[in-house]
Length: 199
Image 1 (cartoon, helix red, strand yellow):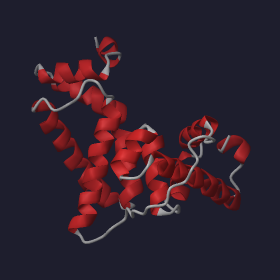
Image 2 (cartoon, helix red, strand yellow):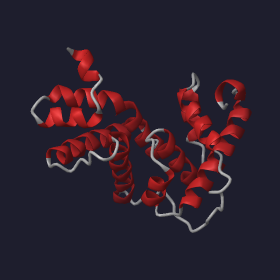
Image 3 (spheres, helix red, strand yellow):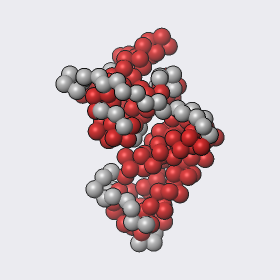
Image 4 (cartoon, helix red, strand yellow):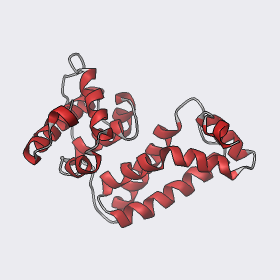
């Protein structure tokens, strides 16, 4: 019985949960818990704070689903990751901190940004060095780390990232580009093989 449920699409699980079966939400959460959790952690860089924010995210997701505010046209993960990011930023605002900085630079990289870079980055996250790479990601500048996290962990498009961070798509692409360059440099310095990790 469980196997067919696991194969259900996100919106089908949401509908099942709304129909009164909490197990549907458990399956949905199981799919994305790790990515949502990591998205928060790579922003706040504190495990205890991450746990607190994650619980708040789950409660807000549940409230919004019950209120009919989940948009079936989009994927669940980007929607949930957007909530997670916003709550993480709200935490810093309440504590008078500002981990996410804004600026007006505009990198003209849209025309020559290689999709192979994106796929290489996504492979980084999924490789055997995942835990160590997360530590390297934390060393990146805030703006670069933010784009890398949203692209790799939350599966957001560059258009969505640009809208969330209030910058142009070219700027988001530029930050991703430099994040990958810097991440490879950090990996080289740490002695991580690019053949097994970055390609």
